[in-house]
Image (cartoon, rainbow, N blue to C red; front, side, top):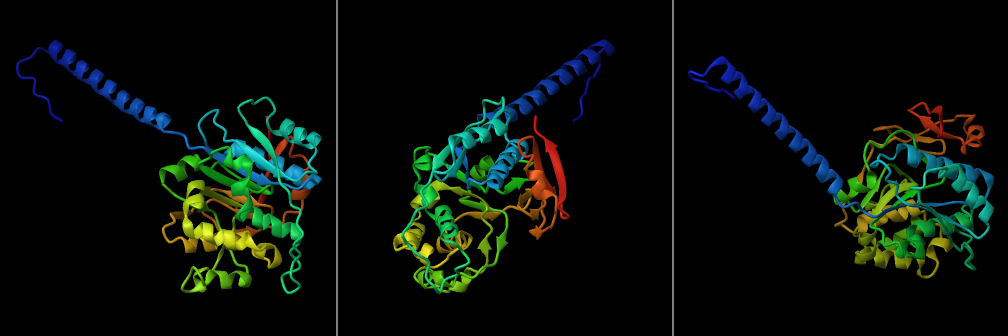
Length: 332
């Protein structure tokens, strides 16, 4: 931009330039402040983080570690913490619940952790021809993450927009760089996941034939120890509702083993209007499986990992990078 001053005195020129500079600074500050205001005025989605735990000591330590990773690495606005619901069986005592809270909430009253009971009792027995190595309890876990959780009173009554699954043995190993709920909401996505894996799902194929022209469209399964789902999509998608109800109607998922990751993969193929995205720019781990930022899933054998997890009340324990470097991060 050029300015013409004509026959104006040096003092007047200086005053004129000073005025222009002040205006430009003010306008610049206004734009920055306006952007900041828009960010903060954005309607925050109602997200919830859910996990399902056992009552043994290892599961308790893992759960505490997972919660530490969410508090430390999920990049949200200051003092914004999404509620965490810990689903559990009756055997999780009040004492153990308080121990989890004392190790995680500490002095931060902004963190909301609640407990919700599930009933894993069933009279259905696995068929002899099914994968008997998968126990009834494991099959019920698969059904829980495919169907049961979405109709649990803790989810229904919470009226949430999005649900994030974080398994007890999962963890973020570095900052996510964004509020994941806000990201999914702004991108108008129905489902987000981190990785895939392969597993046979033969018992599901006859059912899939009613929904897909070619069942081989479902090739890989979702590594869904971590996923984010838009709940309205799940509830209002007619093909999805038909499909999941058929999976549980006569105990198919319990009689014939069907992994929940494969069921989720099928859901994403059955509803062709689904808006789904695989995100690889978050560093995430599940037990000894590491997924560094923009890296693939890799198994690493770190012998001291189990022993270090016993200190999870005081430290966050993660495996970082492709080599799975054992890292201890003190918890304030």
